[in-house]
Length: 342
Image 1 (cartoon, helix red, strand yellow):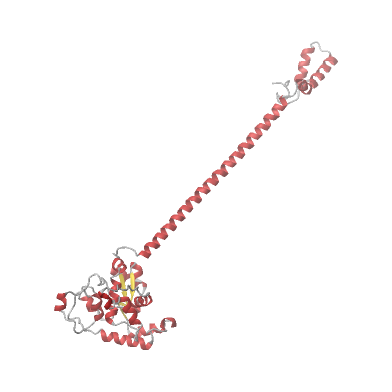
Image 2 (tube, one colour):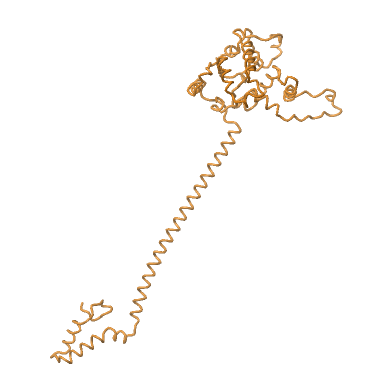
């Protein structure tokens, strides 16, 4: 959880060993025939030593070899650049001294003999690039640990040491190696890295947040290569989605503009068509021959008026005819009936 929150490497000792077990053997370069080195076998790499030890009778790594392996991992570029959370190792004070010790010089060899284990009373120099800045100690009773193991699924128990006998043996070993005078946490306390005790039986979300607040904000050099690649892919996907959305919006606007233009064009075409129809009707009406115009619109009324004048024989026939035409002209527009009163 802490490694995920701070985005740093989770270094679990079991995962490290299994990763080295699965590695392909490194290539061997044969020395030249005339080389002086041909008489001596080439030195084994750390990977070869680890794989040979795992393939041996015990199938386990010796303490010095395991310490070398973990130092190699902690010195790797990802751990040095991003940081790490060390899980499952070191197990005791001697592991701490082997894992975090500074590289020895000639003066150190004279001042500090290698015979016998080094206790807390004789602190050794440490490598500041490997020593963690924070140490969290999960405290739990033996009963709580055994009860938790009982609830593990069978797939996580089969073929491991997570059995009742195995956990009892490991707890006894831990108690034996971490006595009051030889406790692992004293190694860190002497180097001003004060362990933070946490009750494993009450490890709630609130307690985890309090622990994160105590540790503080991350100050590593940035995300890992995998995180950078994932962030780059995420940004590319976002940019592609934004481009697609913008292009879709442009297409929608263009389609709406085309539809509006088509609507206006249709309205204008209908209006022009109606105007043309009306003009054509007027033109057709006005293009009739003058005789037909007179016969259709003038002569019928004029003929009736003349007959009426002949019948009545008024004193002023012209004035009478005029009055007759005014009274009997059809009620139409002046275009169709030129004799209608104005």
